[in-house]
Length: 170
Length: 287
Image (tube, rainbow over all chains, first blue to last red; front, side):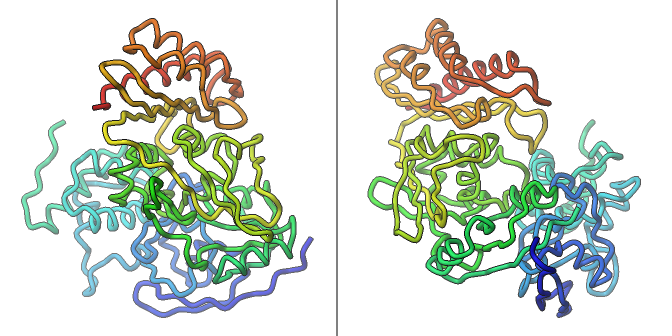
């Protein structure tokens, strides 16, 4: 066995705030975010890269933060669910959509869903229902059956685009 | 689940990366996208003492035309493959396949180099690379060598990479305009490895198959090139009889494991069906 690995200084910008910390190389990014930064909105679900509850936005990409080491995020720009609200503290269109459309039940997957949907709408501001479903394929929800999550994202897209939200026909 | 201790290295050049890998020996592993290696480390199925992160290495990110080949840097992610116009126009089967790999988050991080170099029989790109006649650029302490994808895979997680070598690029012959292609993948759910998958690239002439190459994913310890199956359809109009012959010839070389994806007989049977579907769809696309 190797002796206890030396800790490394890392610094990154999280939700617009410059942060730093001392981490072991093996520290996963999600643990750094939750334990060092005390930003516990990012959830740990499966820990095996399947469920997407730990999704954060890193330099414009959705990343499962349980599958990246904190040292690898040194120097990066990160947005977690805590950084999704509007600057004045009001709910963003996505958060409002999840609330209005009942896009959550137990809420465990919600931080990952919202952070992922945030990037999806940046890349594709007017996604079809199929594109939404394909775009959130890396996020698992065991409660909703996804119907209302899809509606929540459609609601947010409509609000951002200034168009009227149309309930999808059953 | 927390990985074991390791020392983290982030070299800035390939020369430094190779030197680290050779000096540190068997306890060192290169880290590309990390979406195979990090999960394995969390399960303690992999316990490298040194990780050499390739994200800081210059020159592993391009997609360029070199003569008749498209050269793809090892650190190009699946997401970057999907965004590339060169790939969409000259190697559309790569795009079709990348879309069937894992999920969006994994595609943002997972790389082509990691996918082909890991030797995981479940990965989709290796069989495709064999089908396309790709070669891999391997750089090590003794210099650079090229290896055909077809010679690279020796067993599950066992490849012809020598100690100290890193796969730095994949060179794929650009396919002729009018070629037909298809990657058919049966999986239990989005993001899963293939229960069975088949890649087909072909050209048609006068309604008959002129050239054809068929690859198989996750139906043996290594990706397979189904050469007899391809021969069974060349010169035919892909009628029912020749499709059946091709599926049977492909099934002949399959030796899948019996696991959660199904018993051996089932996986071979659906493997044959993937070959048939891919052949039909490729032919319909050929112009």
